[in-house]
Image 1 (tube, rainbow, N blue to C red):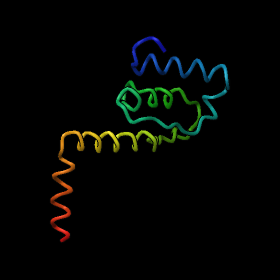
Image 2 (cartoon, rainbow, N blue to C red):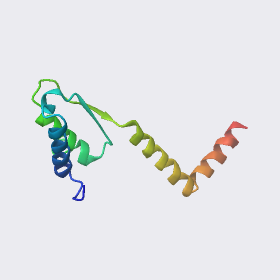
Image 3 (cartoon, rainbow, N blue to C red):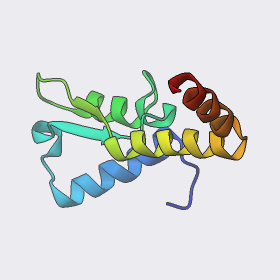
Length: 99
């Protein structure tokens, strides 16, 4: 994908891929996992919302926030805390509290 990462652009790319791989995807897709970003899950223009709107069955699309992305966000938070030395201050306070 060389274009912007908007919900519309990504939806068109995913839909084109699904049309080739499984032409009847609009009646058999059950769920999708995403990173939780607004361009993926937005109520109006998100990729998952657009996929759900394209479905031709009566069941709503099951939306799952990818565990790997959740772990990545946690690790990013931890690393930022370490770099900003908040971690060491927190740990010193925690160890002092334990003793």
